[in-house]
Length: 262
Image (cartoon, rainbow, N blue to C red):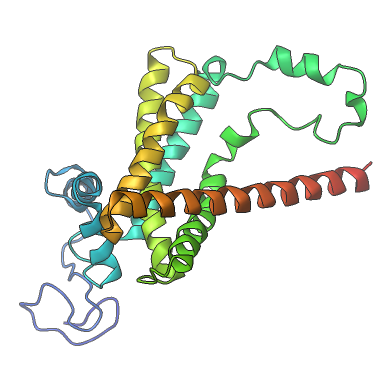
């Protein structure tokens, strides 16, 4: 018997390939097999996804430091976790734009009123929909994670805590962002079901996300409150500054494109 992934010769009793680590699959695909895999990966009480989600609250330093240090079987992979969070965010956006458009908080009549104001005919942003950030939420998440990682890496680098390099800070921020995206998506859907305005929901969820970020940094880097607070503030300043710069560049590109197509 050979491994179906790397073609290494295996013993019949092997459950995993000792060359590539892949699980030995001998059963043909059937609805029962697929259902068992879904239950194992996502629904069972001891699955990695649920364990990762819970432990990112209880002991985020164990989840993150374990992955960085090479222990990667206990929890779900950081990229897989982030991908799961983006999937939930996509479901959230679909539900919002399909069933809860009025709750998003962007009044189309107000948008039309603004566009009809004097001088708006030459406004390069006049044709842009006001809910663009909702529609491209997943892309925004992907683009902002490297910026938040840059913020934490520079904050700790400047203050001479150089325990992790930029890539490892990227892991910290991917796990944090994945957790926040999942929580935001789930609570947004629940709140929208109760008829709450999306802008209000987003405002309510903003403060806890910052508190959780501070909590993650404190646990991962194991520093006292004041040192963590100083680095958290510095990281946020760097992150917001880089985000503002990126936003300005994006707006300039949009203006240039609008002027060229004029």
